Amino acid sequence: MYRGEIIEESLRDRSVLDSVRIISAEIEAVTSEHRTPWLQQWTIDTVEIEDGAIKAFVRKLQKAIETEHSSWFADFKGAQDHYIVFPGKIFFIDHRRNDTYTEAVAYGVALGIPKHQIGFTMNKSKE
Image 1 (spheres, one colour):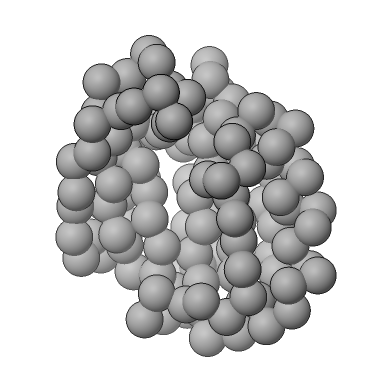
Image 2 (cartoon, one colour):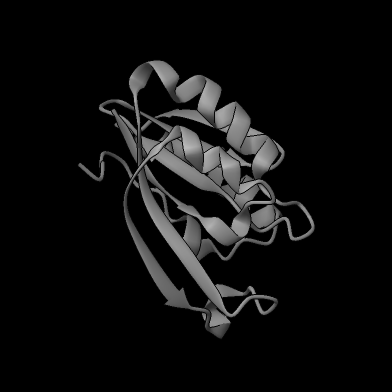
């Protein structure tokens, strides 16, 4: 089972959420730290995806992320690996090794995502 968070406002096609189990939703007011001044709030859905469905789901999600503002990503951790999904790229990472995150963090920063929002670390599964 994979678990992660998806910000609903990051999606141009929210029907992608129909294929996951939403286990909680939280509405958060946008602040200057978020660097999304075009929004007033974020709706953060914590989701679960079955192991057998994760690969197809991340490809579908990649196409559903809005690209007018390229500062979006979502990530999903399983027992040993981690999918990080940006509009233009999907990273598949062994989350037991911090050094495997370097390229994903650099890619996100290059898109303009604040580094504090992409502070991926090893083996911190949200289980």
